[in-house]
Length: 168
Ligand SMILES: [Zn+2]
Image 1 (tube, rainbow, N blue to C red):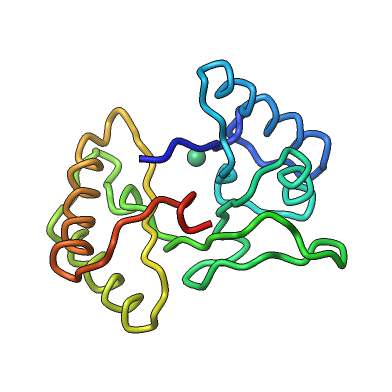
Image 2 (image 1 turned 30 degrees about the vertical axis):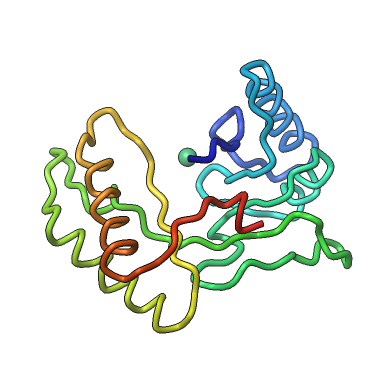
């Protein structure tokens, strides 16, 4: 388990000052709880250069936004001609919630099959398997779905679980 920042306000701004304020406010929130954050995931996976600069200036070491990259290897973005110190870690860009119907029903077996195929493809291409999901009070099936996806990746495909801090 690795607790990291997802910003204070669930929004990624287009300007540096607002992003920095939002990132710092979340960082201080966690520090008040005794948790030092070094990783970040931007709301809606939205990345821009102003976000990247704010993350670097707040001392973050890695971040993950699928608008920067997905289904690829971790890399350091070039921001305004300079290599950023914040490692970008791509994730598989599909969350299980996307398969849940408006009436909160879904077909867990079908969702699991989708992820099994995706995991097989990622392994075939030597790409790290990183799946993301959101919690939602009306989607009680998400935790068990994630458990089944992890069970397949770890126990059937032999992948080793690590958190993003250890990737960095
Ligand atoms: Zn979010």
